[in-house]
Length: 380
Image (cartoon, rainbow, N blue to C red; front, side, top):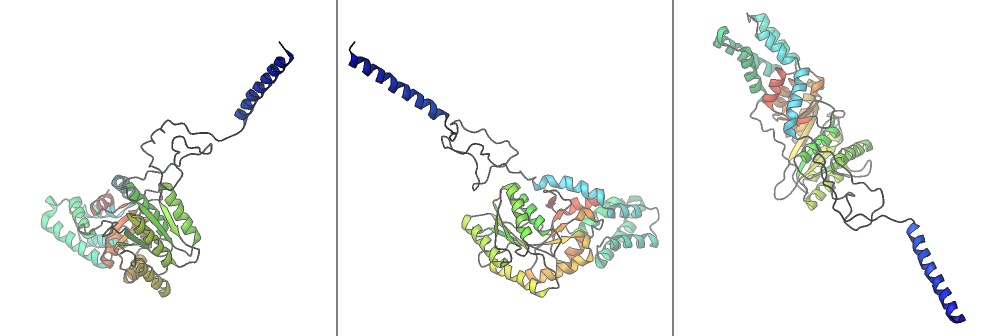
């Protein structure tokens, strides 16, 4: 073999070695992983599908940063299943029904007994007129039906249900007309739990498979918008918020406009807590409602009342009703008070129904109000 042939052979071997070595080095360099093309496993049945706006899962063959995890959302409890649990909780906290049954079951229903019954009802915040009506009906029925045939529990149950008025429309109006979203305006004084109630309402709507948008129109308290954001994140609901100290009506307007543009089912508007004797704040609340209705009619004005405030809550309710035409009551903290009669009193005061009742601090401890279930719980 000639000298030139040997030279060509050595050069060829050297080039081949360099190619092999280069491939090895490239394989060792850091890079981005590629998502396998096999379809992802289905999410477990107790996890809702992630929202469209969030980072979910990569399409086959698309590069994503290593360690990306799809968010999981809570599946709220459906309203129907809440009633049994809440009924048990209410039955354990209320003494009104048990006290009435004890008095009506006496061998002799004398004047002292009837006075004790009346005192018990008044002490439960039922109100003077409803108390007098109930006592009169109970006296008549127990006297006419006689000691031998009258079942004190059945009579009391029927009359209490009539007093709570099962004929009232307690449905939340969460759907708008002509393709517009339903708009729920949530109002109340400071400390009643409005923002928490808005978050819990969102969970009820999500459990019913509705699309929801929240409006943080309490612009005076940055913590309120943050709190609402936390509620929304847990169930995949977005929150529209504005600058701290900004115009609440502007935030509400923007949220409802976005709801209209995106075809959202329901927009829930949280408002700042305000004292009923501050006329300027109350006028501002009326402005929020008027501005919203430039976009879409308000389908529900929900007044949040603290059940432990008793008769003071009735004064609050009347003033708010005059400003924004309240259509329903959300009664919170009912488990913290034995005065379940506030349900009757507030309905009589406003002529509007209690639609939601809260009996605890849990995220799903808010349920639609049902007259018969409420009375059965009071009677244990």
